[in-house]
Amino acid sequence: MENNGLPKYLVIEQHFIKNIYSGAIKYMEQIPTENEIAQTFNVSRHTVRKALDNLENNGFIKREQGKGTFCCYSIEKKASRNIAIITTYISDYIFPGIISGIEDVLSSSGDTLSLFNTNNDKNKEKECLRKVIDGNFDGVIIEPTLSSLENVNISYFKELEKKGIPYVMFHAKYNELDCSYLGMNDFDGGYIGTKYLLQLGHRRICGIFKSDDMQGVNRRLGYIKALEEFGIQINYDLLGNYTTKELSSYAYEFASNVLSRKEKPTAFFCYNDKIAFQVLQAVRDCDLKVPEDISIIGYDDSSLATATEVKLTTIKHPKTDMGRKAARMLLDIIERKIDKNNYIYKPELIVRNSCRGIL
Image (tube, rainbow, N blue to C red; front, side, top):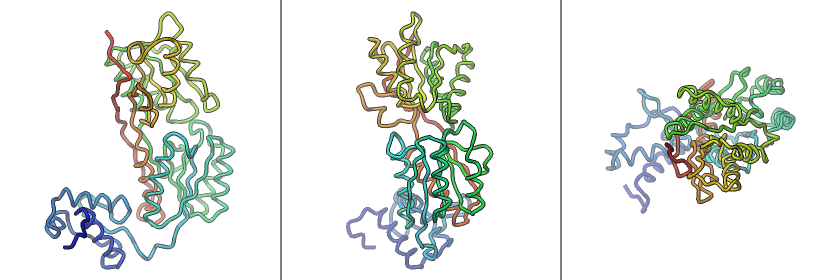
């Protein structure tokens, strides 16, 4: 088969896209197996998998374990749908990656995306929900605002349900709502990060966590579990908790304070890389060094993790993949392929040079 100089996996991918668009492969029709495709195109199964991964990522096919691979793209459904995303922030930190993942999927499916930003404020969340309810939207992807606090906007979520507007939550969910959700196992993230420091010999480990979202609450619980597992009594003087309003300088001031004491911590586990960055600055301003004097672990593996000569050990956040999965999950609900679904990412520790073992 003519490939026009394209890589073999793209030849296979374009073959199936052409046949799906033409109607030769119909909605929910089973496509050939990997072995059959490999034989047809005279390529390896690795090449076939790469093509199928791309087709799946762009919403053309879906794999069902034990059943096979099916076309999930219907040319009859292609009137453009309006999808909203309500998130705490848009242009900052890890959020561009998440939004990019959502846009990847929606652009491939011919749908449009509208962005709403709550700035992590409950009143702004209410305003965003009102705009979606009053607007012409087919579905919503939502990051809850101040998710560990009372859901004062529950009536607006109930109105979404009453109007039949499906929604998917990410990062956290309000417990009183029965909705689709995807996020990280933040308890395990806090646990494995703290355990890593303990295994390096650290015993005076300072933890700094955000208290008004569930990610921070769960990471703090994981931190506590790891200390208890190693028989270490919780020292609340080394446990910092802050809220969204205190974000700008809390970590720097807290770290500076504990580092000025005669009995200093030897390590910090931080809610995220932003907090770790503040701690790093406090360590430097106290004439100490990372990791020689103080070890630091962040969370999210953001661009900040590698922004200085100190490369942060951190917990990986899936970012773009989370955005893609959230978009696919919502589209599957809109197209009635599923009713509700949940997906939890397992945390992964990325080891760099911000930690060292001690005696």
